[in-house]
Amino acid sequence: MSKFLKVLTGAALLTASAAHAEFGLGRDATPDEVAAWNIDIRPDGQGLPEGSGDVYTGEELWLENCSVCHGDFAEGAGRWPVLAGGFGSLKSDRPVKTIGSYWPYLSTVYDYVNRAMPFGNAQSLSADDVYALTAYLMYSNDLVDDEFELSKENFLEVQMPNEPNFILDDRLETEFPLFTVEACMEGCKDSVEITKRAAFIDVTPDGAGGGDLEGGGGAPAAAAEAPAAEEAPVAEQAPTADGEVAAEAPAALDMALVAEGEGNFRQCKSCHQVGEGAKNRSGPVLNGVVGRTAGIVDGFRYSGDMTDAGAGGLVWTQEELTSFLADPKAYMPGTKMTFRGVRDEADIAGIIEYLKSFPE
Image (cartoon, rainbow, N blue to C red):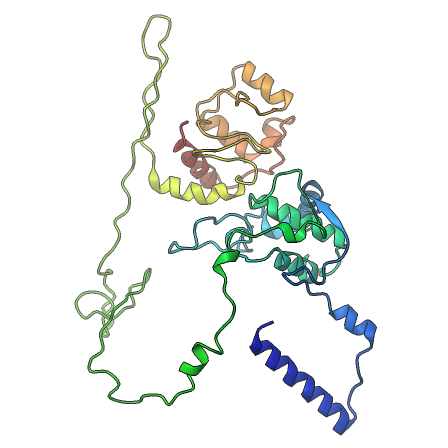
């Protein structure tokens, strides 16, 4: 607890005690009442109950209780919070603050789920349920594998990726003294100059173009140019029996669509990896998937239906991928893919374009 909260809490207790003594209002809380409120979990593990839960159990609980708001894979549904992904984004101009990318302590995850979730039915989960959901959220953030089981015994072994970037609250020693000295009201500087500008909205007064104090509202001084379309790598084309090349070189990538697809791919990352060093997880690596025969990634155990489809000549063309991603179970009832599907055709197009940017 920070020093500010300690001061406020102490003051509140003194006020309540004084009111009780002077006016005869209220009564002291009973030990049972205190215990019912005292459910917080600290980073050092204090307050953790006995129990355990694994990723698979957590996934089932998640789909029943959490996915309606946070998506099947913690990617966020509608405007509800995204809880997975965002790695490496904190220094960008649009950071994605999720459990995996930002939160410093796993105890915060357990505490919040235990205290406030599911929305509308808070504190209805057992200790084992909360352990399982916490394990699933770790899995969704690539922190553990799908066989992981979380318990009171191994809870403190988990270190969140962003923990080293948090510091102790030292505002009483650093900021507070700066705001308690007598303020300068006039003649404080010889001149005033603009040294930084707003990043996304042209609101910084300039006087020589956009956004001056007269309300110019022009373009920013250094507008970023939209990226040009990037040509996709040209794959080697297999010759036909008569020696002729059968297929044309792939079209240039639409980089704006790739960028949109990267965001939409968040809902796929819990199971699939792309890029250098990608590995099979609960779903196969998707490098080179566009134009590839179905069911042939080395080391991944496909469903029988998927393997048979590939042997029968199924190739993941743009059209086939579009149909599959819209409703995997309807497209192939025996698929191992439990994802409900992507409802928006524009989102599907973005995901496929993004996958095209990983040809191998």
